[in-house]
Amino acid sequence: MKIELSKISERIDFKTHLIYVERLAKLSHGLSVKCQIKPLLKKSKLDDIKSKLHLIELTKKSLEDEHRIVDIDKEYSLASVLWLPMKTYYLLYHLLSVIDYILTENKTSLSITHEGCLGVFSKRLRNSEIEFSEKRFNDLFTKDILDFRSKSGEHLRRSATDDVIYKLVMKKIGIYKKGNYMLKAGIDLRTKKGREKMRKYLLNKFSVSIFDFFYLMRIKSTYRDFNFIDDMPAIDTKRYFYNYYATADNFYTCLNNLKNKLIVDISISRS
Image (cartoon, rainbow, N blue to C red; front, side, top):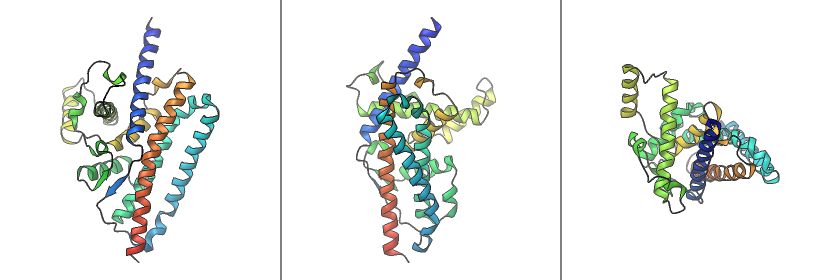
């Protein structure tokens, strides 16, 4: 009975994640972004990003190869969905690091830490220095997102609004982010000291943005718990793969277009 209940729970968890990535794929379709920051990088320093651009190109090709194989054989998606979050995250991370270098001319941007990168671009969302065409992606959520509630089973209905689904996505990512911090900081919530440390983190440092989605899903797939994929039929994991891939590709296209525009701006205005 316990095994059957566990499988039912994992099936529901999978369906929830599938609904979330399907809605993100829809919301990010045709996505664009505006940047209000004038790039500081000089044209003479564009060679600094060549190795990063090559890495981005190779990662993108690897993902496209995965997609082609899944097209041919849905059974391959059973394995592909496990490393898809990692590959897509690194694709976007390297792209964001290049954009940050172009904007700041700070060489350390090309080796920026993952959490540093998330913090920088989330702050730019908060300050409206970058703005996505899909307004929901510009939102930065505080700890209050962890208390968001929807009607029971609402997210499973076709009538669920984009606002409800997106907030539920951010709530789940917020839960993952809180759990990741607790593990990294060695916090024991059974102790008064641990509870106080978590309270201060949530009050003073905790925030969640769309950038956290790709990072925390990478963490979940690599180090934590991706059990909701286990034992799912290949036809379902293929569907999940397609929607996660589409979401990541939409963000890649959007950010890559920004990177190209910034490079053109530099080439025209700087020597």
